[in-house]
Length: 248
Image 1: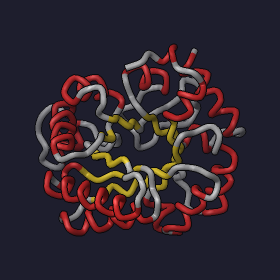
Image 2: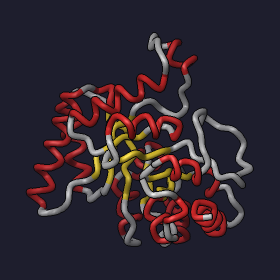
Image 3: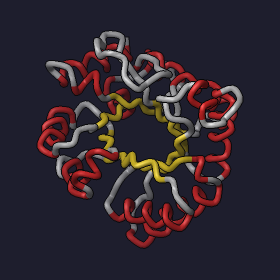
Image 4: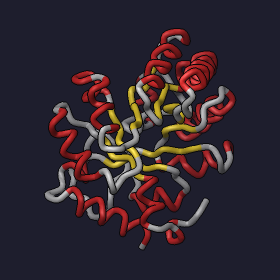
């Protein structure tokens, strides 16, 4: 992987995903307009999509932005593959499914998305597998009966995702190097749990975190930023500070 020091500002921008974790479409549009030239993707999650559905996707696309549809599909193979196919029809550039849904669910989803994209004569979205949520630690896993080292579980899930045809995974920055060793340099790693060095945001659900610079240096292909930018007095200045922090 390239060292962060070798990246240009334009390179860094393409690696940043901004989380539109808001419930108000007007507020979402404000952030889209502010940050459309400072990020590579806008992430639409459960809150905004439940409130507005495809309108949220259209709001990003209207400003020329790319959408990461972060709904973390997890159901029987037929249901997930059909849902993902609908996401392809809506023009999303990236989507994710839970690896815990199993090999068949992931493989069928990849096939379904590729078929729809071919029919539409468009590029299929990047399909990622969610390994373990960054809000979980080993104590949480023990509570639900998943015994064993957390990092080993993440790596096994990443390997399963790769065999099923997924192009990458969503994982904590703390597991980047281990996933790289097992899945190779072309396997895409998207990392939430990112907190800039300057961030004053109080601790939230995230438990396995790194700074943007640390995550990129460790080999993350994309980093997800949300609250530290959304809650900043000047979101644009805060994002520019993140970019400068990464390339410094």
